[in-house]
Amino acid sequence: EDQVTQSPEALRLQEGESSSLNCSYTVSGLRGLFWYRQDPGKGPEFLFTLYSAGEEKEKERLKATLTKKESFLHITAPKPEDSATYLCAVQAVQGAQKLVFGQGTRLTINP
Amino acid sequence: EAGVTQSPTHLIKTRGQQATLRCSPISGHTSVYWYQQALGLGLQFLLWYDEGEERNRGNFPPRFSGRQFPNYSSELNVNALELEDSALYLCASSLWRQETQYFGPGTRLLVL
Image (cartoon, rainbow over all chains, first blue to last red; front, side, top):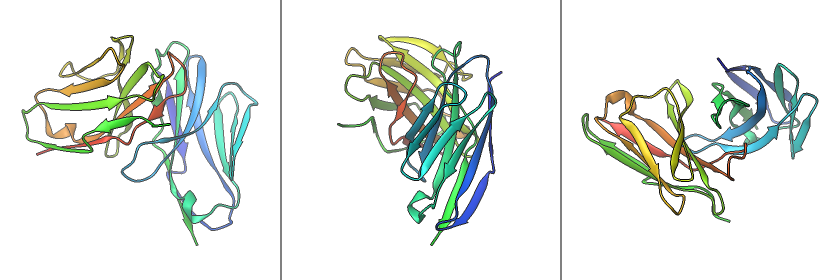
């Protein structure tokens, strides 16, 4: 069964303090790995899609990387507005479009 | 460009009633997905509609059903509501069978 585990569950940083979020996955043939950001009471906002090991994508202070077993979301010099829950999901080749989500990492950036 | 829209934003029902949730995909998107986000359980895949047909279903009972209309909008119906159906119901859409799914703001369903 496809599984996604995210760590840590919660992370509190000071503004400007860089860190990384981890997403470990097991999937029977990876079609894509996705990162989303979710603010309280709202729908997930798409950030990145990664398809193969070694791939990297960047957007402002965020950079996502992918290996055969895990993905990292690196946050450089974060600001308070980066506070949110970050969700990782995988889609299997044989998964008929289903996204399997991790439980998320709740990130808080203190000013 | 308008994103995925959902209505209503909030819905309060009592046990045993039926709930109907609606979703309009991003213009040009033809695949629609439904997910349930219950407290402490994370996002769980419910249904996938494409070309007016149900293409995949998650591990949910048959009282969760829906349909997709010719304009690609979709409706999720939940019959015989139970307390544990209280959750945020999220709709997502994608270009025809493309990987990346874009989510709407959700409908918060509360069952009393």
